[in-house]
Length: 423
Ligand SMILES: *[C@@H]1O[C@H](CO)[C@@H](O)[C@H](O)[C@H]1NC(C)=O
Ligand SMILES: *[C@@H]1O[C@H](CO)[C@@H](O)[C@H](O)[C@H]1NC(C)=O
Ligand SMILES: *[C@@H]1O[C@H](CO)[C@@H](O)[C@H](O)[C@H]1NC(C)=O
Ligand SMILES: *[C@@H]1O[C@H](CO)[C@@H](O)[C@H](O)[C@H]1NC(C)=O
Ligand SMILES: *[C@@H]1O[C@H](CO)[C@@H](O)[C@H](O)[C@H]1NC(C)=O
Ligand SMILES: *[C@@H]1O[C@H](CO)[C@@H](O)[C@H](O)[C@H]1NC(C)=O
Ligand SMILES: *[C@@H]1O[C@H](CO)[C@@H](O)[C@H](O)[C@H]1NC(C)=O
Image (cartoon, rainbow, N blue to C red; front, top):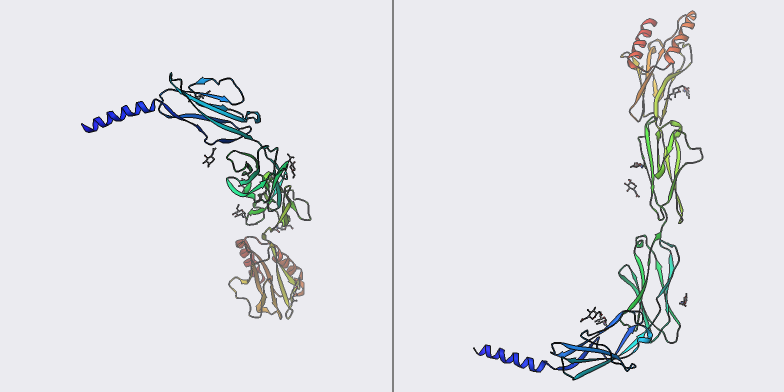
């Protein structure tokens, strides 16, 4: 019950006291308010007290005529001009009361120009360059505060007195990194540390040299499809070209856009190739050695003496084969199932028997093993001719034995036949 009475008393007190306007307040507060020319600005007038329907009017000291009386408490400037400077008064009255309360404020208009950025049109990675921000046309400005931002990060700021200078500028030395590309460089200018600022931005595009990455897909065997690719970064995007060093470009390899080369490998393609990537910053080259493997093929055995062997001569056999790179291994055997004579000296592709004797006779096999794992064999029939009249026949055997024998089965059969026939 007591609580209720207290509330009623409170409400009564409130209405009587607050139906009056005690005081007028203007926001933003202060006797003098600095406003930037060119900005949008408004004063808002309010009454302290509790008049339910206050009416406001704004007047300018220099003009005699009363401002429009309205319920609207704001005085708006959509674009403040130097001429708008002056003293403004807000008066407020409540309902039908004739009592007015006044409040005035001095508006000072200050001005400075839109800042201007002067910088190189092209910025290159890791190359320091100067960027200048300048501002002029000062009015009611004692100092300017210039701040530099890279994206949203403050990178430099400084205050300069304007004094009587017509033009104030600040220079930033920027050493650009490629990841600045797409960020904006902003120069923000504030006068006398007041809130309003003007800024100028430049969207950065940092140029940098190409960097090449070459790759090739192929084991490098002849007849295989090869894809050599050359990629490069760089800004601006570089042009990419393939060349063959010191030689014309081979017809069987095709150069495509975007740095790809395709084709079926030929041994003549072996050589040094280079990819050239070029943009305005620089031209970069990268070399690649192309090795084409082939063989073994056309395997044969060369003999000294070339034709007839007689007892006591030195027999020198050399295993020849077309291949690249050179053989991984040569395996010499005597067939069928005959061990090499212990007098035979074998070094890689050579087999030498210094003092040829009857028991050295037989069919010698050379097996070439290539790095690729491919193998090929050749056979040579070594026999001593007893009679001079069989010379013609031995020559023929030599010719057969020295020729290419590509199938092992065929080779062995041929070998058997020859061996048997010679005995
Ligand atoms: C005052 O008038 C302006 C338009 O002139 C309007 O945008 C604003 O909302 C009004 N304010 C009040 C408090 O009525
Ligand atoms: C201000 O001075 C700088 C050089 O200090 C010049 O580049 C710029 O053009 C000047 N700005 C104006 C608006 O005069
Ligand atoms: C200026 O900015 C400060 C901090 O952001 C703020 O407290 C103050 O009210 C602002 N003044 C005006 C006039 O907007
Ligand atoms: C080159 O490219 C390959 C595959 O495209 C990649 O794995 C490698 O990291 C790249 N190297 C460089 C230095 O960019
Ligand atoms: C270039 O070759 C790479 C593989 O090495 C492939 O991923 C890419 O699609 C090729 N580009 C063109 C344009 O052929
Ligand atoms: C065997 O013949 C090869 C050529 O076929 C030769 O290079 C080598 O020196 C000869 N060896 C001997 C010991 O005569
Ligand atoms: C075998 O010899 C022929 C004729 O000389 C040649 O055309 C062919 O390319 C050779 N093969 C290899 C794998 O060297």
